[in-house]
Picture (cartoon, rainbow, N blue to C red):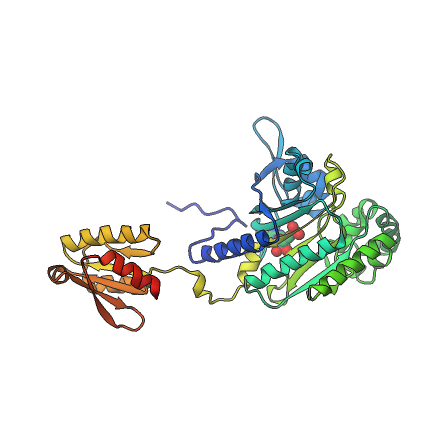
Length: 421
Ligand code: AMP
């Protein structure tokens, strides 16, 4: 019978790789909590309306990529394509704004977008999301970006660049939309069907289109950054000063618009040359209107998302220190030794030592092989003779040296030996 395989664009993450995931998540938890952020856990399924209202009707995500279905009760539901909208929903549903003027939240989890799968692009992928709600200061933008860069440094990522831009606010963006609309109208014939339609609805989205003709059409388009209002300019200037004060290198990329409609003012992206076409590792921005647009009070916010699969694919190959291999392998021969191994192994685990053993009574040689394969630091050799003489041998698997360990009080001796080294 043929085996059933995973759905296209959905992938398994196996042991060997999961250690990297844990390392990334543990590092994120540590760095973010140093900045006062707390974890929030939210569902993967939401009412479709939430994403339509927040991400924007004319974005690629909402137009083409969402996994939307009617459930058995006839309600339209969607597997979340991103996390910010869900975090905002939870923030409003539980009135977090009423209990604290500042909310600093982060979450981990899978996102779902029906894009064409390719290297670095999946239909289920994972993000680490950070959201900071309450203050609208530009220094907060610099702080959040600084935290992102620090996190990437702590997971040992190198060779990345940070790009920032300002998308203006609802007061200044419409005038640019008009200018851009007029500019693009002259090039209408070279645009793809979607972008031709977007000319009337949301010309900024043409910047985001991956079709060659559209990319060429916007290559000489006016910059939004030249049309933003004084307040947005001042905000952007202060943000950049903040980044400089924190010694965070960046470049202004006036072409960056990001794929979601809710962004205002500061936006940013972290890219790397080693990812090919899918070069963004993380991205985010300020969204000062989103909470209000979702029916809440006027609370500004800023956030970012890190693509975990892409990040992990960029980490150094050799990260031996994050993989846990056994401290001790207990090789035993004979019924009595086997029983002693069983007790000792589980008592050591109880004390926080990674111990392994084998109950199969295979030859000591094959048990040693297994110990080697598992990468154990030490092997304890426990045979019939050793039991008779009330002592076993502890073998250092790297150097090959052996030393006797008395059977009485063996547990304490092993703990102090293994913890000391
Ligand atoms: P976005 O929510 O589109 O701003 O994406 C944030 C980050 O998520 C990107 O920088 C990527 O690292 C990652 N990402 C987005 N879409 C995908 C995908 N289809 N597959 C893998 N990673 C993705």
